[in-house]
Length: 316
Image 1: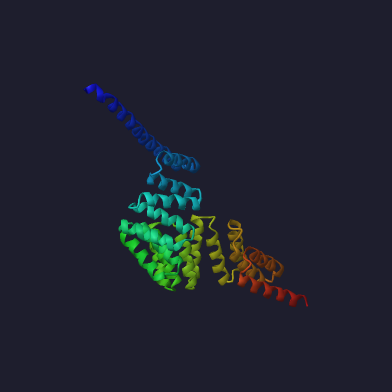
Image 2: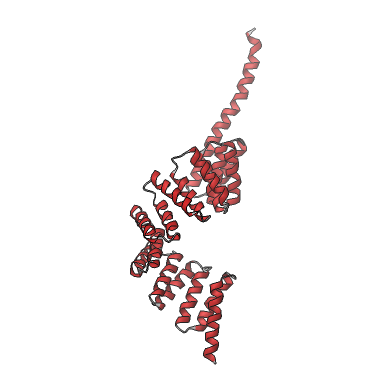
């Protein structure tokens, strides 16, 4: 009697063995993919995670990790597709919704990104980063009061979040609340003394207040921390221009353009400064370049017409 059941027992054993092997293989692939990603070999990590998905197409974790390495390669459309699949398979995973919101925001799909961040917060109400990113998306939509509330919640959950303080400062600055914005930037810098972005933003806010020497000090600190920071060079040029230090302002605009050759604003401002120095041909060339970069740049159009008129009058 017992012999009759032996084939059945053997068959069950044979069915179970591949499942164990697949599980072990997928776990090994996770380890290999993570190692490749940490080493910066994102294309290899992508290949490995795609293999893990082939072995187990219903593995939401593999899709999430694939999304991550696709984002690292700036393959944003593919990353969004992978993340959408991940949330279908892991609908209760806050981290996956957070990542989906992040890549959707990169696609400028802000409404969907906000929905994803809110879902991440619903699943994990203590996720400070989700509140911070939610605030950024809301700010991009012009919903400034909601953005401030989100940043404040992020800071409440993580008082050491320098990025949340910096982003809060940006929204307060946009609302014209310069004192509060400056306080937020200073707090960000206190938390992260090497935060070039916060120094740049602090400098811009101080410049708006007319505190030009303090602004220059902050902007130069930003450039000390990040010598390739085009926006900080631009803001330095603006502030020097207000002080009528035109040679230095033009030099700053040239540096901004060196690090961002498509910086239409820098070309426009450099053209205006050159015109103030009477270097009209150089000014026209700079303004024409600004318009080549941005055909609809109204201020550059107006400046170009004004400088061309100045040159025409000068020749007559």
